[in-house]
Length: 204
Image (cartoon, rainbow, N blue to C red):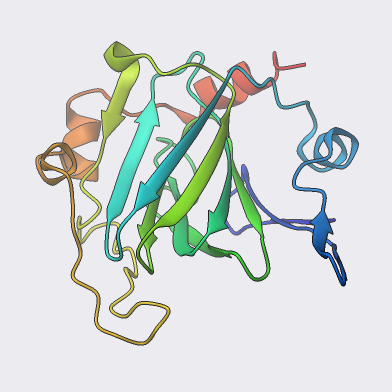
């Protein structure tokens, strides 16, 4: 297993080693010792979620109030998604920037999006199945969104699926109505880099 930090501090790409034989494939999707060595603390797993999405479905940009926010270790068990980590931390040198990882059932990579970052993905084929290991349970009163089409962020949303056919992006009504990054900042919804770093320093 290899872990590479992305251009957004607090986000990592995890590439597992796969072991094929005549029965199929075996791989380690998560290993605490390697994760902790790279990230600096353990993943305190409190909830696991699964979503199944049609091609073009957009989920995000989502984030939660800190503390405790909600870190996510995300894998695509079937199909393919383009996954984004977005820096929404006020005061961060990469504020408003993003990085992405292709998660699919071929390379079987994962992405870890730590507390205080925004998260979004786009499904590249029907029935793309994504599992999220989360550091905190879902709490509606702490959950927020930013419109993934916000031109200030400028996510490079895919225009074609894994089969090469054009994608028609599909957003939920909630994500469509979500504020822009600037509006979220004006409404006091965004975390500060200082608050994020102070909280992560308490994570064991």
